[in-house]
Image (cartoon, rainbow, N blue to C red; front, side, top):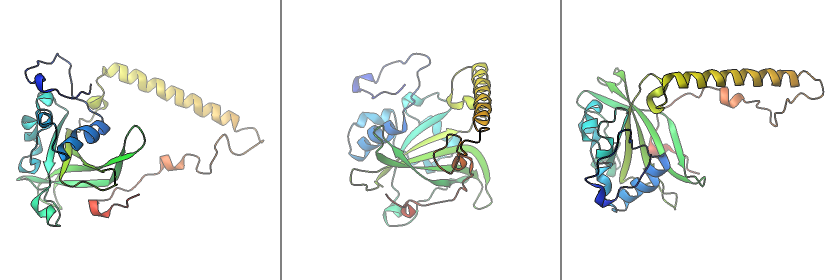
Length: 237
């Protein structure tokens, strides 16, 4: 359930089962843009402004906004640009016991109208000191907004901190038996489609089997090597 918070909602008691589950578009287009423009101060009750690198990730839930209090899966924070970053340096992402390490490549975030509105960077928390730290279950998505002139906004980022649960239920609140049934049904459907495709390809009329291009889905099966990256290395469209 996603929602914008009104000023007169400060004393509202939310019913059991209520969760703050915004989409990425809502995080960037509403919350982060209002933060960048200095509007809607009441949003800090939902997403507080915090230097998350002053704390260990397992301590961050206690600083979360009131709509995330008691949530065991994810927490949201605004993070201001560090002084060293403003002077052209790289931000420090170390804590007293470890460090956040970037992983993968930058990913554009699109609006429902298929417009680029921001960038997402994924990080993992390691205990110890680089490069020999121990990987933990704590992860983070760091979002930065891209304005209408395709300029990346550095003043504030919005961070979603979450825990890798090790099961599919982390962001799927259906009962596990329902998830299992759905997964089995999907597997059976996939096998049936594969058999149907094999039968249709047995005829010597064509060699394309309904595929319009020559990739035959190979791109989806390829493993893409993850690499560390920095914001200034992005190839802008």
